[in-house]
Image (cartoon, rainbow, N blue to C red; front, top):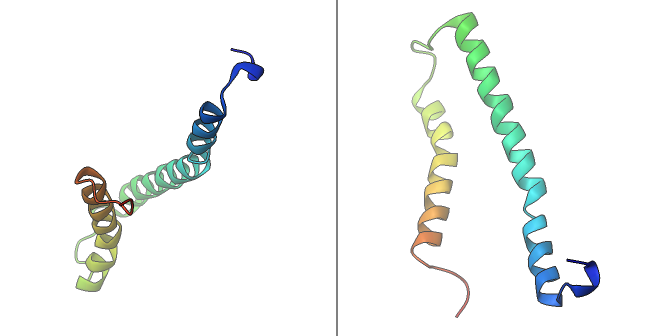
Length: 82
C-alpha cells in the first residue's frame, strides 16, 4: 500500500506501536545481558549459598511485584478511561 493511501488512523496506530519498539528492544537487550551475566557468574562461582540476605530477596522481588500489578490491572480491565 502506498503511503498516500494510508489513513490518518492507520498512521496514528502505526506510530503508537512504533513507540513501543525502543523500550522493547532496550528491555530485551538488558534482560539478555542480565541472563548472560547470571550464567557466567554461576559457572565461575556456583550457586549462591548464603549469599543473599532478606533485604536482597526483597529487592529482587520488586520487579516481579510491579509486573504482576501491571498485568493484573491490564487483564482485569482497570484503566484510566471512564
